[in-house]
Amino acid sequence: MKSLTIKGSKRESVGKSATKALRNAGRVPCVLYGGGDPMHFSADEREFKKLVYTPETHTVVIELKDGSTHEAILQDIQFHPVTDKILHVDFFRLFPDKEVTLTVPVKTTGVAPGVIKGGSLNLTMKKLKIKAIPANLPDAVIVDISKLDIGDKVYVSELRNDQYKLMHPDNVVTVQVKMSRAAMKAAQEAKAAAKEA
Image (cartoon, rainbow, N blue to C red; front, side, top):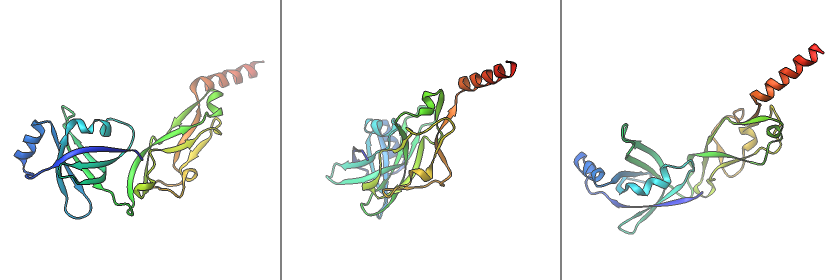
């Protein structure tokens, strides 16, 4: 999985006035959980652009001014209800041997024969929740659609592997090729024409 670096500095005081002063200075108050006491730090608001405003999922390396680095994942983020500014970010520390649960995007590969015939590809699950050790976290769950005809579906059970666990029931549909409205209409018109003939 791709990793991003966020440069920050530890926070000495965590009260309301200190937090407000941070936000006014264009910094985001953050907390890193996991492995002992939570660690409070702050980072420049611009540091979060590539992490937050993207459909992709990343791990994060938090680089602090004291020289320490911490590998983590984004756990929670709070936005201002009006301005959409980032108010607060929670991270969860990663350990090489501990599994972590994360939501990753679903991406397709190949061309579905059903789409060539006029069907429409429907991504019913745009994201899937997975569990794995950090080294096995994928950037995305890849679904091969090259054998899908109209009416075919790909279930979670078909995507299971040894690298990570999918946290969804086997019968959940991830991708399907549906008959498009235009193809349906054409089929109905062809039926009607055949009856009249």
